[in-house]
Amino acid sequence: MADRLNLELGARPWKPSADAELVEVYNRYDIPLAGLIAQGGHHYLFTCLVGHADRANLWAYTLLEDREVAELDEATDEYPGIMDRILRRRTLLVTIASEQSGVGFSTVLESGDNAPVADSLGGAQALKHLLRQFLQSYGEWRKVSDEAVSGLRTDTDLLLA
Image: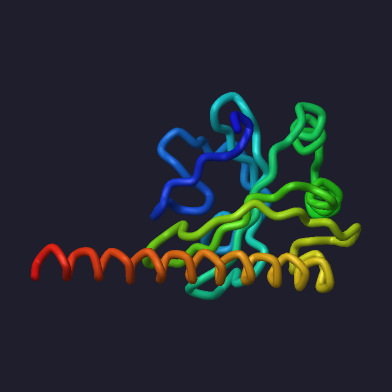
């Protein structure tokens, strides 16, 4: 999908690939926690959903329309409210990241709930829903990955026998 953000494993969440440009930071605490990224002619909103001060955290990205970029450009202190509205009922690319290894597993989820998504905006129910979806997707990915690795070990053992 041409309008989907390209994430590179190990990248920083606010600079998720070599061709991504950090355009604007709306929230910062030691690192950018929310802002605007440009990549491939598109703009994306990013925000740290959970784990702002932890070693591991969960991030969300969503494609922005030109009018939404303009609205954010014109905003002064209304970023939380604008971001909240943008993140509602959107397709989100959600990824886990850590200090040591950067961006890791990611999946596409629907925010689905007409409530604030970001933890800092008070959207506990919507956030719990997203976390459940993410953990389920991650668990399924781990199961398939573990089975694939097990199969590779068997194949390698047969080849080396």
